[in-house]
Image (cartoon, rainbow, N blue to C red):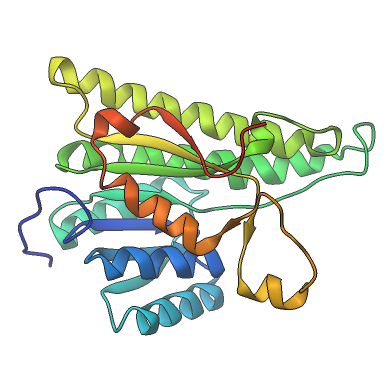
Length: 252
């Protein structure tokens, strides 16, 4: 049970990270925990989640990071997860959405609509379920934040990325609608919680650089820089970040 007094910011914040397995999750878990956050990570892959949590906990000096297998394609499971966090810690102060996935084609006519079915689940349905599940808890927090990681392809779709770009665009729209709910419920004083979208081209990490030492990865965002940008969302006022897209790569 988290008993410390929390008034905003990352120190003492209770933050859930969805889709935390993998290099980006590891970097985000470590960054949030180093700032004093109580971090609860979730992923559908037990092995990936355990590796990310163990590595981040070690890198952050034994910080407060726990992991839980959650089926975010199930609304009730997502709601149960949000409820458990708030019950165990007394509140929930953030949800970082890192659930990803990519499907593409060589050309527009070759688009496989089965890719849309997969991406709809991964990129849209998980946003819908987490936002609905955490909405009220974030409103009850003095520093509630919902952070979606999106892609520049949502703004500038290409012929071979129709399904991916459309799914990302829908996820952005849903998140901005969440932000509008926070704005309206905040009344004349403005929102107390915030929903924001961080836009990248793609992510890069040390293993990718080692595998492709001659690649430039132009416009890519390092996972550590992404983690920094996520952490900074809690440093800014809800009015500054709610309902916004923040570009971490050149805007097309």
